[in-house]
Image 1: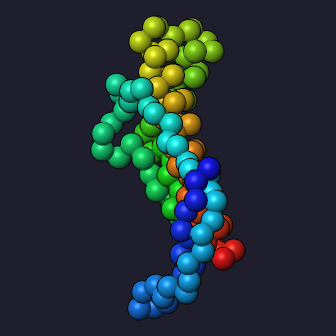
Image 2: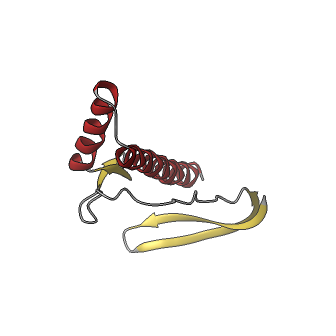
Length: 115
C-alpha cells in the first residue's frame, strides 16, 4: 500500500471543479502481464465497448466470442491440436486481463460516485 493524493471533484457542464484533496492510503493496482495474444485474434475489431450505467465495459467482439466457442466445442468433442490449445489458453488469459480492467474501471467509478 502507498499513500496517494485523492482529488475529490464534481463534474459540471463546463468541466470538473476541484473541491479538495485528501491524502489516502490505497493499494496500488498491478496489471497482469499478458504472455502473448492469440495468433488468430484480429488486431482490428477484437474488442467491443459497451456502456453499462454510464461506465465503459470492454468485451470480446462477436467474432472473437465465436472463435472461442468453436474451440471449446471442438475441445469437448474431438479434442484440440497443440496449437489450438495454446490459442485457447491465450484467449483465457486475455479474458482474465479484460475482466481485471473492467473491475478496475467499475471500482474507480464506484469510488468516484461515493465521494
